[in-house]
Each structure stands twice: as C-alpha cells, then as structure tokens.
Length: 103
Image 1 (spheres, rainbow, N blue to C red):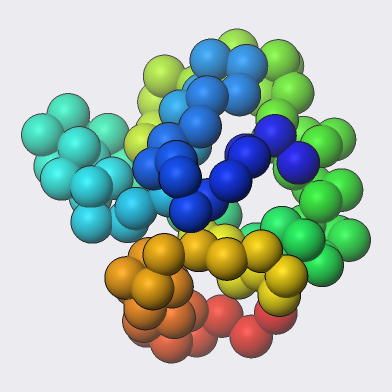
Image 2 (image 1 turned 90 degrees about the horizontal axis):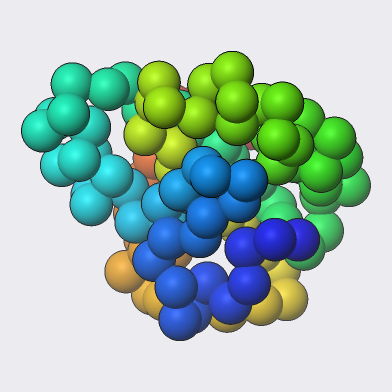
C-alpha cells in the first residue's frame, strides 16, 4: 500500500492527494478551508476489498484529478499486523463506534 509506516507519518501524498491519518488535525483543516472530509475506514494490511478499492480507485490519478482538491481526505486504519500510534488508534476506534462501522 502507498501509505508507508503509520507510526512515523501523519500524512501521505498519493497522486497529489494528501491522506491524513490524524482525524483531529484533518478536522481542523476542514474547518479552516471549508472543505468537507472524506473518511476512509480501512484495514490496510488485512482487508482485501479495502486494498482493491484503494489500488483500483482511490489511489489512481483519475480519482485525484476529479476529486483531489474538493475534500480533506482521512484514512482511518485498523491494521492487524502493523503498529499505529496509540492516540491515533483510540481516535479511530471512537470514530468507528460513532459512525457504526461494522466492516
């Protein structure tokens, strides 16, 4: 996947789209720019459908060209193997519950 190590990065740029990994920072940016947030709930290292969606759609140049400047993009990851910072994991779990994400 194009994101690299979540433990080190707070954002990743793919085809011109900046994917934020910290919801709180992205929410502040959304408020200051007036752009809506695009939330992607993913299991980057285990969910094959998530990986397919990301590689075939969300990480393409066509997607970036059409929507890249219209949203603040946020990737909320729920990995099983790789580590993410504890505070990011806690925020992601809270958002998962808030939006009733089941899978």
